[in-house]
Image 1 (cartoon, rainbow, N blue to C red):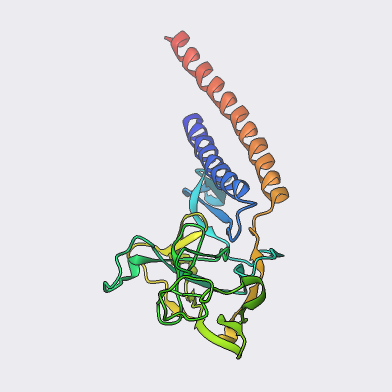
Image 2 (image 1 turned 180 degrees about the vertical axis):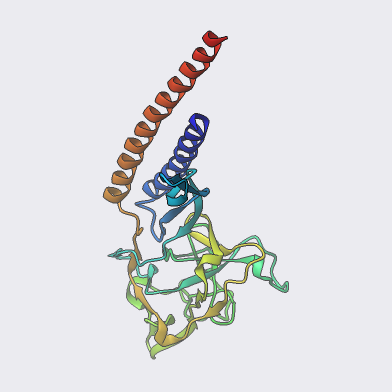
Length: 285
């Protein structure tokens, strides 16, 4: 029974370490735009029935005894983060569910692209590269509705990069709520490409790959689909903040620290009891 108690406490301490790792990750990303916090769940290792014998010699169940808790799984909380105005016309925030589809920049052109050439992100801090393609902070390409790179110029079909083909982002660029990109021209408003917004039917089958980017878990089918115009809204000039809260994560850290300290004291007590039992056994010999 003594060794069982030590094992139970050890499992609980390991579960708290896992909890602290998740909390530390959330806390480190409270200022990361588009970041989604993680949660952790626990489960009993084993429940054993406890029986007692009455005066007549009959046994009956009086309850159950847990052999400790362990980490069950971690999952991502995709709830909406707060939206903040950035003042940058190239910044776009998703209001509601959805992800931007992004293609790695180092993928060769004119190949048959496969799913592993893409990833998905909520972060909408975009910019234009040297050829006026819409890219994220890593230089990877944002996809349109036909999985093409998005070029934002007055004449997207022209490869020229000059003053005549360039536009004033602050004055001329308009990104509608449905992702449609338009520019103001002397002859009126001109329609360009439309930003693609995707979503997953089962978000438990996607995981983070760092920097608020997401992919389907290997071997899993999360049900990827392209969203329709009326199922999301893009907000131009806005960024989505992290949905992780400093106060909440700090409280988790404090609670984990207190729980770990309590279990550490229990472990010391169990260890001392075991040592006394060993010494008593040696004396009786």
